[in-house]
Amino acid sequence: MKIRDAKVFVCCPGRNFVTLKIWTDQGIYGLGDATLNGRELAVASYLSDHVIPCLIGRDPSQTEDIWQYLYRGAYWRRGPVTMSAIAAVDMALWDIKGKALNTPVYNLLGGKSRTGVLVYGHANGQDIEQTVDEVAKYKEMGYLAIRAQTGIPGLPSTYGVAGDKLFYEPAEKGLPPENSWSTEKYLLHVPKLFEALRLKFGDDLHLLHDVHHRLIPIEAARLGKSLEPHHLFWLEDAVTAELQEGFRIIRKHTTTPLAVGEVFNAVWDAHILITEQLIDYLRMTVVHSGGLTHLKKIAALAEIYHVRTGSHGATDLSPVAMAAALHFDISVNNFGIQEYMRHTKETDEVFPHAYSFANGYLHPGDSPGLGVDYDEVLGAKLPYERAYLPVNRKLDGTMFNW
Ligand code: GCO
Ligand code: MG
Image 1 (cartoon, helix red, strand yellow):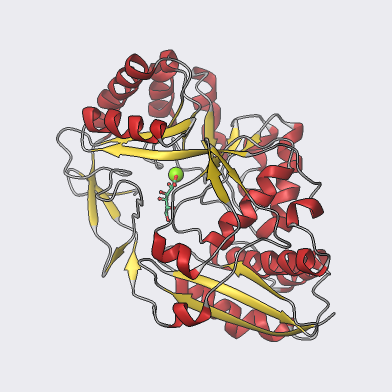
Image 2 (spheres, protein in one colour):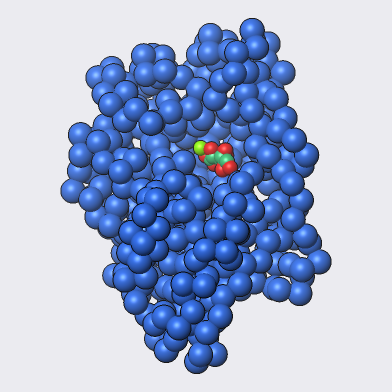
């Protein structure tokens, strides 16, 4: 079998998605997600201008060799643009492999290790009362694990608090919106949210929280400590993690489980976090971390150090990436949880898929390959629209992390 052609599609069913399609000379095609929120066209160009010409004529079953060819062969290693492009190729090749062998991709990754993939949904509200109500709604939908975010008194906007509750989307059309931030106000308020949630829902529900990189290690240690009585499933992205050693400080002070990694793109972003057991869950996912070929190696390293997987699954990961994540999740032994932010009906129409949600779990389905398709005709009617993630400033105007 040989790669005959490949093409990049950019569409916007309410938000932008970049999709790679690879065709073989045997009439089989595979799909890969290459969406990098707010920087979509950079990956589209990387693929069309630099990668696709090198793929034509290669044997698509050589997933390992092609991964190494694109990673080592670029000379310029790592980075979100490169690794998302490599991921898209890798996903498409695993999709082709599954279709050629007439089996779901999870069977090629070791088969099913569990009956379903535990997921968490996103509940958020302007204040604690609203967030508590939203958590109740997710419970009613069958979720066993729920991430809770709330507005902070005195701050006009807060990360994770959305207008549209079910389909939270942080990117906005036009130029980057500006948010504001106060660590002091945040640290005082968040423990009250989890106190209210435990009071209302008891101890069984899994509760999660995302700090979105807004603290420094000693502040994160204080937050982790103050949340201990409410036993979170995890505290996510408590600090930025370019300085992996920073997690030593958090770890020294709190037993609240720590998750990080949605912005990582290679094992070298996490090797200290893993080998020093500074985290409990690694949030790297297929699309931004070099695809299934790289992620399964990272998971194998993490397994030795008691670190579980917790793949990023926001709306900016297309259903192609979500499908690939589910095949990964159901197969690796050290799976922890999968984030599941629902896509809108418009998005699901462009990307028909075999995966489905029931009773708190996602199931990848049993279609050969990844079990997801791309409707080219519909996609062509929904062209790219420039959109950015917000930027964030402290109350005195200092530029901060969003
Ligand atoms: C999450 C993430 C997202 C990101 C988004 C950026 O935990 O789901 O933090 O909400 O902000 O994926 O594109
Ligand atoms: Mg996050």
